[in-house]
Amino acid sequence: MADAAADQEAGVLDVDNYTKDGTVDWKGNAVLRSKTGRWKACSFILGYELIERMMFNGIAANLIIYLTTKLNQGTLTASNNVTNWTGTVWIMPILGAYVADAHLGRYRTFFISSLVCFMAMSLLTLTVSIPSLKPPPCSTAISKENCKQASKLQHKLPSGSPFIKMANVIVAATWNWRLPLPNDPNQLYELDLQHYSKNGTFKIDSTPSLRFLNKAALRGVSSDPWRICTVTEVEETKQMVRMIPIMVCTFLPSTMVAQSHTLFIKQGTTLDRSIGSHFKVPPASLYAFVTISMLLTILIYDSVNLNLGLNLDLRLSLGLG
Image 1 (tube, helix red, strand yellow):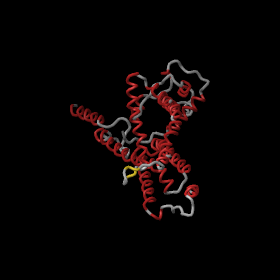
Image 2 (tube, helix red, strand yellow):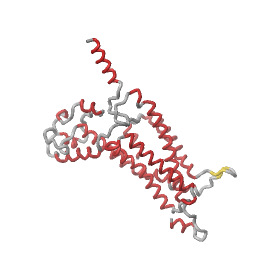
Image 3 (cartoon, one colour):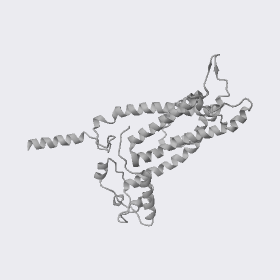
Image 4 (cartoon, helix red, strand yellow):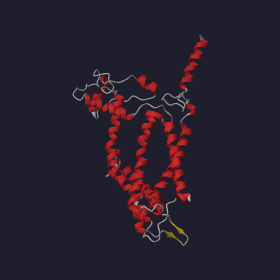
């Protein structure tokens, strides 16, 4: 009896040493807490982000110059290409998140994306290094203007597409829009807590905002997944819907920021950037003034907020305004 109790206790302790939030290794096996995440993952993320940020900002700051001087594109065409590239860079994580959550998982998606990024950087380096890949220079018989005109990381198994879950909630709420909501949110449909613990996910309680979507969780309507959803799925959809106004508010600031990588740098080529007789400041480095001004603004912003005690919503409103 004592040996059996000891073995049982050892088994419980051994299970407690493993992660319980659904994280696994790249083969899909459970992992020990002491061998995953923490500073090992942080060092990987910090190193990757340092290299990735240097790469992205280096390209973003110099791309307008490269397109206009090496590929012989006009300023308008080059600016449009730069903004299209920047927009693609920022929109692709949405596709990557879908692929990671629904199909490949985080680790494989992250690895494949990094490999594609490395290949793209290598091709870009080759185009500016190998003479045969460089575009021909403008002929001296053609004017310059005409020439331009001619030119915390842990791996989890895929858990399904979040877009499908959001669509389920919206369809179910629309289908049940005539049915009344119960006064007690506990009467809405929800799975047991053990279900979420087993799958390494978290249960979210019902909130009073966007109550129309709560109709997607009405009990006894149907067993069809397009007619009934859990409270957690409804709340996850609410979180995404609440982000839409914030996203819309960033459209105009993002449009203005895009000019710093195109028009601002292009204007820098017309300035006298000489320091002494042997050094000339690269026009792409003028983007550093944007970063410096942001740092100074943050200092002023934090000092004013400390004195006035503004809440987060008011600070966001003032900043976007």
